[in-house]
Amino acid sequence: MLCVKCESPMTTIRTAIIGTGFMTWVHADALRRNGVEVYGILGSSFQKSESAAQQLAVPHAYRDLDELLSDRNIDCVHVCTPNRSHFEIVTKAIAAGKHVLCEKPLAMTSGESAELKSLAEKHLELCMFRR
Image (cartoon, rainbow, N blue to C red):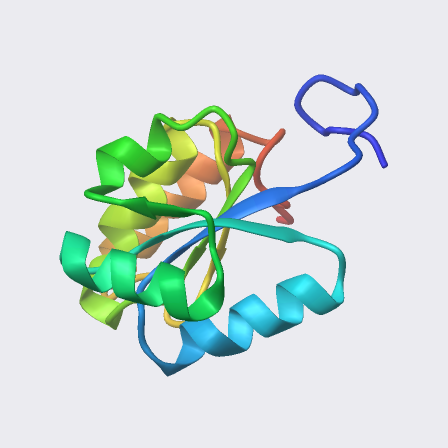
């Protein structure tokens, strides 16, 4: 498998899951079944991050989104948070050079959707964009 950013061989994809609700557990299981390393988790508080990391046997619990997005070990983030937070998280994750898988809806308004479309067009190495 080749990294789409640098075209070098990848042996492991490392992902972090944002959110600690039911879908976090579903994503963690699906990722592991497909050979993806669940490397970190971010909850709405550090206590939730730590608790979920312990329960899911995930090695890293993050204090905030900035800490997660600055972690060079993370290739991809899975956004499993309340709908109203998706736009901000996805925007910041793409700006940080992370691949993103986001629960639906991706955005809450057509204006936010248009902004994400424009951002995706500027980051084709991260976003599978089709006209």
